[in-house]
Picture (cartoon, one colour):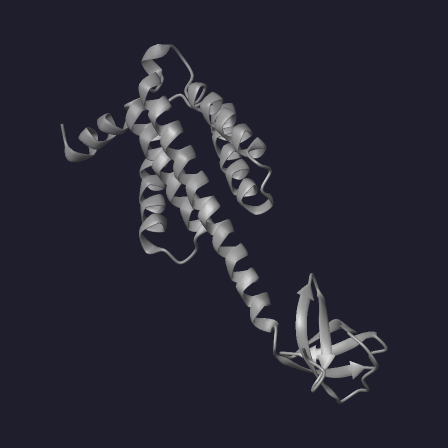
Length: 207
């Protein structure tokens, strides 16, 4: 057999085709969740190309492919909105069902149940772990940034009596003055943050 024939013969193995597809999905998912990493995206692209070649030699069920990529959407959505595991569970179920029905035909044309179980557990665990780390890092960054606002100086844009607006770091914020009033152009000190609202005090009145 020539090298090309040997490659085609190897890629016609459902287990190898499934493994390549899972590696492609894993690499793409990690790149989406943590953009800028070189290795995951490279792995995803290379595995995806070989997975495409492998799947082209096998009787693929479009529904299985759709369910597997739907699971990818579930995992990414979980990282964005945090459903306390509900969307992750949907992703795992979609991945399992899609893997089982990925290929048409009998058992000879399907991936090994053991391989499906291992890859489902591994991919789900890795993506959930990365998603949690990303969300935790974002929350920490936002929390730290807001804490650093305290003690900073802002400029009054519209009269504070006690509510109005101030300019801080080039942005316009709603603000509430603790007592008295402040006119446009005056400097105030930030004492607290609540959502998109700043709590401020006049200079010299800060406790």
